[in-house]
Amino acid sequence: MSHIEKLPQASLPVDYLKLSRQIKQWGRELGFQHVGVADLDLRDASDQFRQWLAKGYQGEMGYLERNMEKRAHPAQLHPGTLRIISVRMDYLVDTTRAEQVISDAELGFISRYALGRDYHKLMRKRLQQLATQISQQISNVGYRVFVDSAPVLEKALAEKAGLGWVGKHTNLLHRNAGSWFFLGELYTDLPLPTDTNVNPHCGNCTACIDICPTQAIVAPYELDARRCISYLTIELKGSIPLDLRPLLGNRIYGCDDCQLVCPWNRFAHFTQEDDFQPRHNLNAPKLIELFGWSEEEFLKRTEGSPIRRIGHESWLRNIAVALGNGPKTEGVTSALKQHQHHPSPVVREHVAWALQQR
Image 1 (cartoon, rainbow, N blue to C red):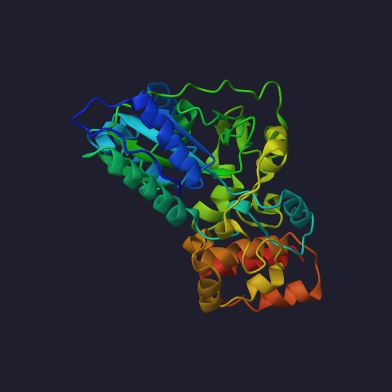
Image 2: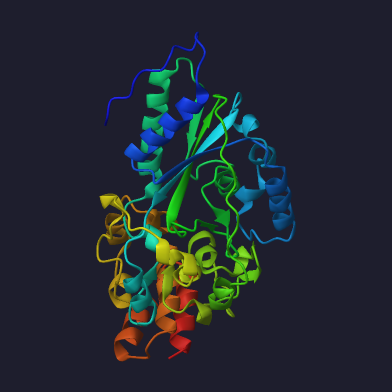
């Protein structure tokens, strides 16, 4: 990492504009593709979030309803916070392969973000390194690092920090980077100059709304998570609604359809992080092979992966639905029958449904 001239001690006047520029440079050196600074005014975003919750769109994600005041007022989450440094890290690997997998019913589709190692630890470590660099230049800095780990309105903060705009699919978009990226935050008590919002550029495009397999994008900029395949395959525990099962196709962990079709993603950049590269052939796995994983094998092959957190039961549930939506071959029928008497009633239910589709 290049040597940066040490800034004046905190007892002397600090050039916060210069500090902000240096923080952004340090962030880029640490592997973040964009670094911006936001203030704490989240009134509009928190009002919209409350309205979204009031409609019940969060489904069983009860944690989204908790700590609303801390979401709306970042200084309540971390006392003393004056600014939030928002960062972006690209994770895109290969969208061409993604489209090929979705069109092959014998394969299982896994959201591109989950093909490699879990991003939480990697980004948290890099943000901590950024905070350490700041602390070495300005003494007694107060800060706290977050990566999808607390009540944080991260997309609203990233929008305020100039990292992009929230698109009609409710993902953050940037005209020069698309949407294939992760977000992280560094809360700080430094009075840094803030960045300006990016103007939205979705225009009249409705590609993401039109492509959604379950029509989860119920209106522009409004997502009913209860219908979203990412929610159904990752967040939801128990039974997947019967009317939605055929719409899942072969998507067994998440869904990227709205991103794959977004015109702005033709400007997306491939990741430079080795940890985000696919592991265990999960970019194009055969469903029957995945269905044969024991719980021990599942835990071994998903070690360090975000997939592990759904557990073996939901993994088998999702694959059973995908097999039910796939080719009616003897091999598929045989694989399903091997789990007919699985200890989990959830797995048995979805296996029985899949066999009924034969």
